[in-house]
Length: 119
Image (cartoon, rainbow, N blue to C red):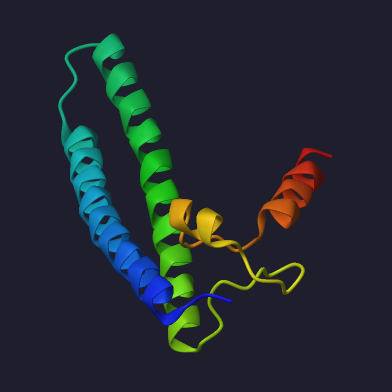
């Protein structure tokens, strides 16, 4: 079971990552908007701007997904349900949470989940 000081450390890590992602998502959105209104001198410029905009949209969506996962983890901390695997209901190891504090699954269940996605 996680100790209070470990949970507090992970909470601070989540809050820092949240602020970083919010900033990155705003930055990505601003660039996407600039690319959208940019005048293209030829088809190649248009294709490049379109591709860049598409790639930034994918990146921004990933940032927003991670932000949502962080919000869920912060809610779990408040409800005293943080660090429990959503598949097996066992404790997620502290080493895994230090690497990914918004992890939903323990390592074993994550591997099973990824194998299931591959099928």
